Figure 1 (cartoon, rainbow, N blue to C red):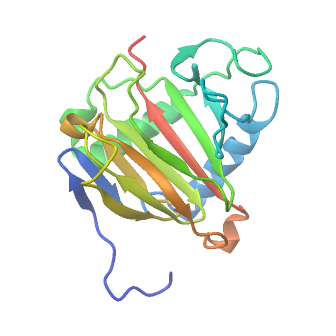
Figure 2 (tube, rainbow, N blue to C red; figure 1 turned 60 degrees about the vertical axis):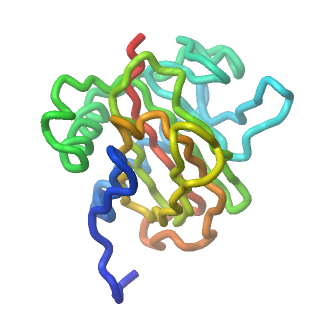
Length: 216
């Protein structure tokens, strides 16, 4: 958006949960998108996630470092083509530490070694139900980066999937970090605004790159 009536600024949504708008510049967004396109190619590429109850997630996913499946981690795509998971690049870990530094401070980022990425692709009809990122053995903050279409990001509380929650608009380039007392808060994506991404990025849909420390 070229002009804002109320400019977007850094906002603490809950204790330990911070939204930083426009954190990635246009060049960084393009470079990250090109990396995502490479990661999405087979083997161990973009897949549809199936839940234990027989359903499927509407957002498609590719993993780096370790492969996430409901509800654990593996070295291979155990619920897909069986290929070894793609490696987690060191530069992505450095980006994660910089994100935590900017959102929560250098003391929180110190000695944080990100080793897992979940890349979710949302088309216009994709959603993500309320859930917690609780399959890791580390309490390090989760880093979330957005590319492409704007979404409604619903950030709740650690105790229940229901209210109270806060709906946050995440646009292309935005950063969201949650750790500390909010590390296990329920969160989800109830809506994606189709066609709202920056045209110059050349992405139809939304990409969410989530960085985690496995502790494994």
